[in-house]
Amino acid sequence: AIRSDGACELSAGSGATRTVRHADAVAVLIGSAPDLTILDARTRAALEQAGPPAQQVDGVKATHQVFVDVDRWTCETRAVPSLFAVGPLRGDNFVRFAVHDGHGVARRLRAMRADEGAARCTLPSHE
Image 1 (tube, rainbow, N blue to C red):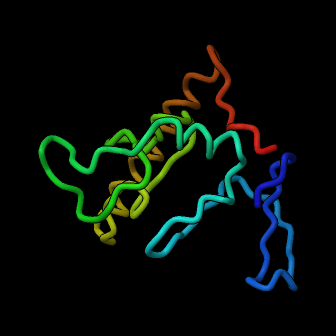
Image 2 (cartoon, helix red, strand yellow):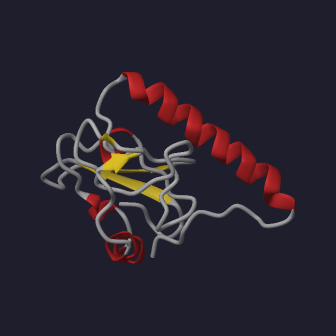
């Protein structure tokens, strides 16, 4: 879970072992089906309210089911700006897409940082 102070709590499946680490970013690797309960309720609600994402882009079917609607060049979610979804969450489950996804996210973050003077880049509150 991500706490309101930005710390990330990691625990074993049983919950027996817990470690709290401060992180600048968190990557949630979901396997074959997403469990987005790590996100706060407000963020999950925004994603749900956006409705199901399209399973095609420019007439091309995604290689896997699309779980989150994102900008295809930046991987930024349309429902929650400054939240990014890559790989299987956006419908591409092949390693070759990791380079594109990572590059798109990095490019968008650089653009957001450049715009900080006008409007400060902040992550959604995780309360």
